[in-house]
Length: 148
Image 1 (tube, one colour):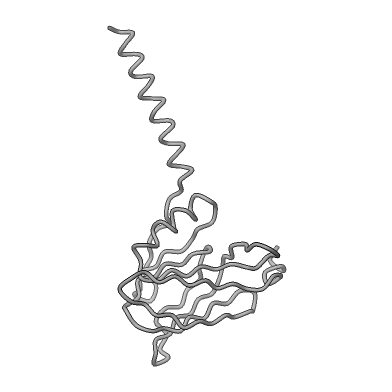
Image 2: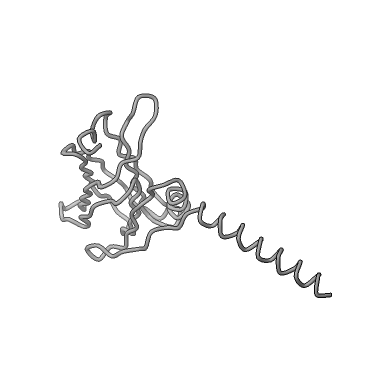
């Protein structure tokens, strides 16, 4: 009887260790923040956190993704200055994305988003509706070389 209890405890401990390792690899989403009264989440550095942010994005009205073109592929960008304006030109959100993803709970409507990295600014008009919207900002190769 004692042997089977020890075996069960060992199996439970092993299961907990494996679950803990899987959770660590899966990544955790960064904390939500309020910027200019808007709920945001920023991050995605590392494979686990990037996967967690992409999964979380389906619950947010707007996802912005930032990358730098690097030959045949793209590299994620971080420390991107983001400015979001409404149709009247009023600033709705001004923040710095800590990683390649910025999630924002904006009200439905049309916005202009400016994303700046290493002195180069990209601009897009985005429409936020009742379904999640996703927009990629892709800088040309060599944009962030001074930071390397």
